[in-house]
Length: 169
Image (cartoon, rainbow, N blue to C red):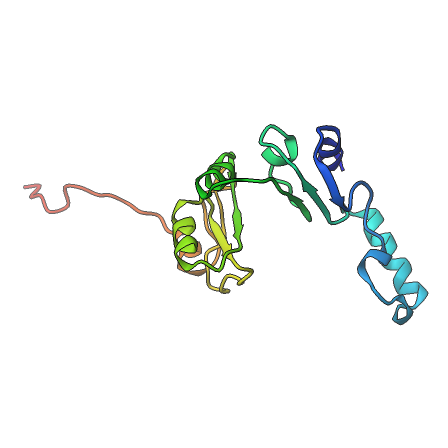
């Protein structure tokens, strides 16, 4: 809630969502299938947890808190850019780097962006990462990986030893 309030206070344009928690009405287009007890349980669930409404901000700038912080929730911050280079600079100008999302039909652009974006995971055109893909970030989003061989390597210890072939006698 504090992040959303800071976005409003700092002048971002709130397009969808905003302050407050989700309600069961936000999740279901047709509540007639829900009996009142399950609807009550869902409302209570939202009240007890740390939930925010799905929120989209436009006209964000790099000096805004919502732009700089790694918000774990359904909060999207958008800004305009003119060139691909500017978009890359905006995306990489963060102490965090868990996941970047890219939408483009241009194959060459996808390849360029995959190389230049600083994130542990890059999702292109909403294609989900494979289950065996490594999960993890860069910068303050972490440098370890979960999943696949990369996740197992965190449990291995590399040891350097010298002098084993020498003759002690």
